[in-house]
Every structure is written in structure tokens, then in C-alpha cells.
Image (cartoon, rainbow, N blue to C red):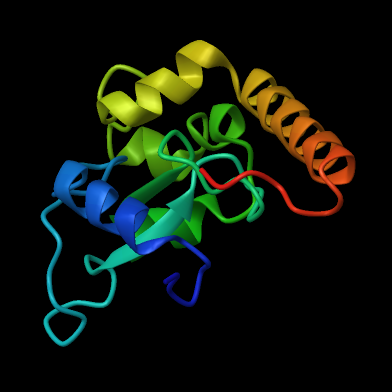
Length: 132
């Protein structure tokens, strides 16, 4: 079963176990009642809601999520927000370093190829794709 963001429950559990603090600034998550800015929010590292993979889904604080918005990761890391908070490619969580290393565009291309392969399999099998 998926949540409101179509993240499967197994992936949500995996990401929650991996991302105990903000993947960008490293702040500890708080309850929204304590501070909305430091409460956890779901983040698509590559701004594409269709890419729901362990490499693209993470947890960050609402402050970082709001600042990043729809900016590309590489562009966002150069903003005043990041500079003021010492958020750099060296200080972010390993999952973000992986996205930087792999390059945002290559992640999008890989996901696009997966989607096309899935559609071909679905078409060739009479409309039913194989179960994962």
C-alpha cells in the first residue's frame, strides 16, 4: 500500500530507517508541533514525482524542502540558503552524494529507460506486466 505520495510502504520504511536526520542540513527532525521548519518531509531528489526509487526518495526538513522547491540539486546547492547553512556536496547525506555523483540527468535517463522497458513487457505480455 502506498501513502499520499505514492511511495510504497516497503520503500517508506526503508527510507525512514536510512534518513534519521535531514539529508541536506543534518538537523534532527522534530514534531511539527515543536517546529514546522525542522519537521520531516518527503523529498524527490530529482524533481520528478514519477521517479519513486530508493535513489530518489529521501527525508529532509521542511525548511530545506521549501528552499529547494523545484530547483535542480546542483543549482540549489549554490544558493544563498545553502551557503548560509554550509550545505555543500561534501556535507550532505550519502544518498545525496550518490545523486550528485551519478548526475541528476543520468538518473532521469535510467528511470525513463526502465519505464519504456516496463511498457514493452506489459505490451508483449498482453497488458499485464510481470510482478516485481
